[in-house]
Image (cartoon, rainbow, N blue to C red; front, side):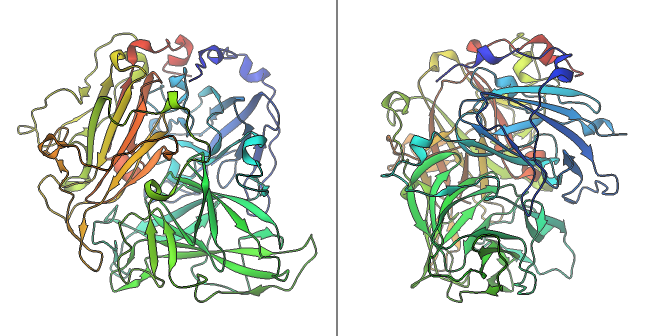
Length: 626
């Protein structure tokens, strides 16, 4: 893996902030945010101005539009060529801010090889940027594909501090005639950042349920509406107001990019009377997989090809459906909430009469195919259509095989870690029964300086009986003897006491890597799809790491050259996921649930990967005030 230490430290002098040749970003247009397109630049300077909307108070109940980046509803879409160097200057211009309005910016999907202090996690890889402060992020745009950026401080991401990060692939790879065929790639017009608006639950609101009878992410808030690129979606089809819409021309193929910027909601995405040909997830190109419904959790990205029907008349509009996987407890066939955008057929710039074509059966024949279900089979009655589930491990295969030298060994495991996530009393969120507490200074700095912190290590034995829920900077160390060897992590969502009343589905994200998905295992269900028992493959203690039951590894763990790679994976409630990767990227990488309320309440752990091999951070970057 290419080491990018040579880019560190360039242009970090204070006067360079005033001398930078920033590119000019476009204004927001239609239903798309501002675009900062680096085009063919190998080094691209971008300026972010962080402000707070004065008449939108931060009430703590997901108000969405509290923070602004460059005054947009969401942050600008950054587009860059693969392997370019991005230089993003973040200015925290929040006026009259309290001390807790410091910020950091995480570049979700970027591996930050050789420059772990550019990962943008406050108190892990940097001091956060205080009000009036500024920080220069310098990193290489790799891997290519659909990614995003967002604040990694408290719940700022849920309140407007996020945007799309698109790294263009090499044209020879993406337009190979025997691979994906020809299509139009317009990331400035066909990138959909989907999120929801939550509110405090009241007695008048319908009670939501998860279809497999597992627990909802947050018992205090419920979903109020969906939005795309910051624009609110109506919950019903309105033929007089088909907005927001995304244009296509008959007979053309288009690449759409979906980004799961939600706070906590797992959703279903579909377009009436159209198949989705999935070609990428979390930045990695896949063989096309045809599906009717795409399921997406927080932090995930999926790209698909839409084939616009050449027989459809211009002016015809098809609903784009965003539906929660959660349903109403009083009617399982109805989602907790849904929202509508529209696919509009057009020809050139001329105006056409709009005709909304709602395809009642939704799918061409029989039931619908659904990709990325959080269950083994879709629970009966939990959708108005029959859904046949496929998970990413079974059906998604890499378009371009991984070179043999970069493939983890499925049998020669150098380090195996078990990470069970859960919610304890009063909303305390944990990994292995331990609540993560931020360190008093950035881990990337303190460990390089051999300073002792109050961290607790995965490898240490904790006194859990005397302290039922330890709280500390929780870390797992992968020392240098594991360099370039296979690391296996097992993510699970299992109740140590066996109770089914507290298990949940979680989207697990790892910084610094794209792991190989080696196995997805589910609980046992009854004939209706309700969980009746958790997986029996693992033994999970009340506190500390689990093990394989009877120390016997289950069958079916597989990694090969076409195994799908991701950086966010859904852990089924009552089940587990096995992921493999090579220890080849020294740094301190956050591993956490991407549901913000879970992360804020402690569901995270920091991976100290090859700390002895880490490049030293520049002293200027590690100053507490920037």
